[in-house]
Structure formats: structure tokens, C-alpha cells
Length: 193
Image 1 (cartoon, helix red, strand yellow):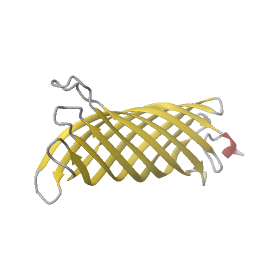
Image 2 (cartoon, rainbow, N blue to C red):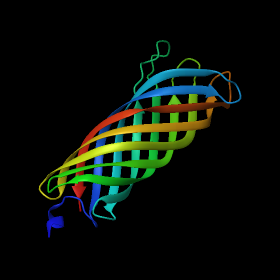
Image 3 (spheres, rainbow, N blue to C red):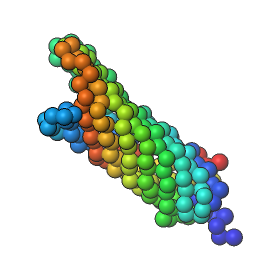
């Protein structure tokens, strides 16, 4: 049976753990006021996912990711900002290439994201929000043997936080919208059970 030589098939269960680097375009607006600012952000990401083969080429799964944003130390307080987010989603994948040692696939993830930005600046600016998360992704697993693989991934995520809570020393509970979209390159390991 030639399907037994495939590294992904119906009934396959994979656990992936990775590390990624992301760059995002951001857009901020105050709810009810048409003030928009645009910027860029970068982050390191640690995703953990599980995938189950519901067909020989189709897999479904869950993913949790933790993000830490890159930021410079504040020039006045000398403190480093603590800017983080996390995502939880469900995904579907189509496995384009399945050989004994190579698994190349792409898919769509939909889920929820939360963000917490604590600037540690002299105004004590903070922002917290929850919102939607989606990504289109292309991944590869390169198996060494039958159960262990190295992974590469390229993702194109979008996050949308509506009516988040901005607070500082002079403003309390200002509703602020934040959107982000960009790309993430990742590496990791996978284990097939």
C-alpha cells in the first residue's frame, strides 16, 4: 500500500512547536473619532499546534501562540515596555506534497487574539484588547525517520482589535481600535504520534 509510505495521511496526529519572527503593519484609530495613525511592529512568536488527519490530504487542528513585541527602552523611565499578545485558533490544512520524509501543506486559521501593551513610559500608557485573528499559512515538515521532523513556516496573519481599552495618567478607558497584518517566518520541530 503506497499510502503507508506517506508522512501525512488519514489518522496521522502531529504536534508542532516552533519559534517565529514577525513584521506587521499597524493601524490605530480612536472609536468615534477619525484619527488614524499607521506604524510597524515586530515580534517573536512561539506557536504550539496539534493536527489530525481527517483525510489523506486534509488535516484539522488547534493552535496556541504567544507573541512578545520588540521595543526600545523608554528614554525617561529607563524601563523596557512589556508588549505581548496571544492567539488561539482552529485551522484546516491541505497537504500538497506528501512523501515518506517531506510534508508540504497550506491552510487557513481562524480564531481569537488578545493583546496587552504596557509601555512603562512616564505617562503609564497601557492598552488591552481582544479581537479576531486569521492567517493563511504555508508550512513544511522534513522528517528524519518516521516520528521526528524539522519545520519551516510562512504565515500571513491579520489581527483586528475593536474598542480596546487605552489608559494612562490623564485618560481612562479610551476606546481604541488596532489592526495589524504582515508576515511571519518560523522554524520548529514536529512529532508524529
